[in-house]
Amino acid sequence: MPVKHYENFPVASLLLPARLRRPIEAIYRFARSADDLADEGEATDDVRLQALHDYRRHLDEIERGRRPAPELFADLARVIDEWRLPVALLRDLLDAFAQDVVQKRYADYGQLLDYCRRSANPVGRLLLHLVGRTGDDDLRRSDCICTALQLINFWQDVAIDWQKGRVYLPQTDLQRFHIDEAAIAAGTGGDAWSALLDFQIERTRRLMYAGAPLVFVLPGRLGWEIRLTVQGGLRILERIQRVRGDVFRQRPTLAAADWLTVVGRAFRMSLV
Image (cartoon, rainbow, N blue to C red; front, side, top):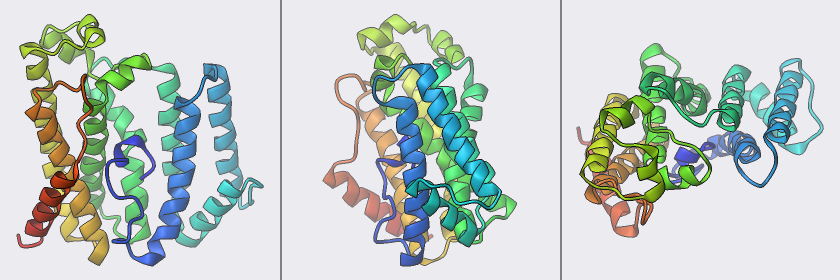
């Protein structure tokens, strides 16, 4: 889905019911393009923030029942009207992207989770609105999965984010494991670094496990899509742990053999 943490996993794949592909693709285009405004190219911060403000203005138009001229927003307006999607969730995504422009460090885990609440969780909630599963338990489990996926992306991309001037590892955790930012810049790894990543991996894994029961209440092929997403995320955590947190020399991703493992584990989930 739209935000970076979904790039390792299926997006509007053939597993999804055909009727869901168009709305999911419209949401993806909106969020992907907005994320790129905040993150790609050489624009100044002021230019990035103004572009995101323009996106908010178009959402305001949609909420007032108007059809914005840009095709991206006209398509999105049709999907919002047809599926009665909450515009507030799309605004949350824009808030998170704008935060990426101005905030480069996170004091503690709670602050990072608040970012994930806006950068990741709206994606899952929008998906649940598309299938009419918006009970409290379903939303909570979806939030757990989406936050876990966002965190997995952070642990994969420590080196990449450093090049952009960002550190998503909470400052309190860096202090707890006696790691300063010079170690991230040098990409040295070591026992302390491995222990820090193990700590992040374990609590991210717990989040994913807490959300995993959602797959049993989602209908048909969508349930399979999310099974693969959950197992794909857990597999990446294993790969990060296997290299003792050394994400500097090579970003851990899923190879063909990993996908065989992911599919097998997703199938076993259906037998529970």
